[in-house]
Image 1 (cartoon, one colour):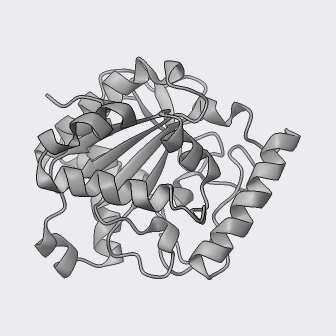
Image 2 (cartoon, rainbow, N blue to C red):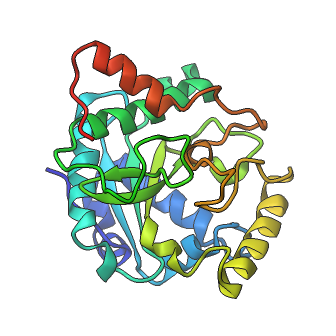
Length: 257
């Protein structure tokens, strides 16, 4: 059984954890709360500093245990996310062996990321929310678990150019959809926040922002393209969530609506 943790708890009990977990959390904190405030995700930084974020640790992302771990963490998080603060997110660090990093490309980690989402979804007992499309090509689509929609952000140790996506350990952050109720194109706050984040993103990465980064719900937006950004501007020809679901269905693996 895995449990959610907070910054406050981790700061007090970090030495009780496995060495890789200690290292993952320390390096994450150093990155997101750097003293020069260069990290581009302003809400993420605020969430870290104000104890709004929740954390979890999962097994090797290639393993079945990782799927169990993520599902348990999402189940716990869905029940409490609205009580954690307006900068809420669930950050999951995965045990990432050195050989996996040394032998894997960006494309390999991309497959691992979508495999985790697909396998977690395959075991979700809760129906997909009625207001969220099950078609990833629809602007309203978002990854859901236990009835809650989330924006999923993936970081890997092999990103080189997009430094904002480079994390020492394989990482997936799940941001509840409700967080964006105030951070969107319909509010002055949201438009200003986007402008600030985009400028910091360009400064941090040293390259233009990926063209897939758009507002949720916009007619030409597809959220899944933002989940895993490659170092260049390319995207998969079709959503791996749909493609892999179809493959699993053919193998007799049941997916819920």
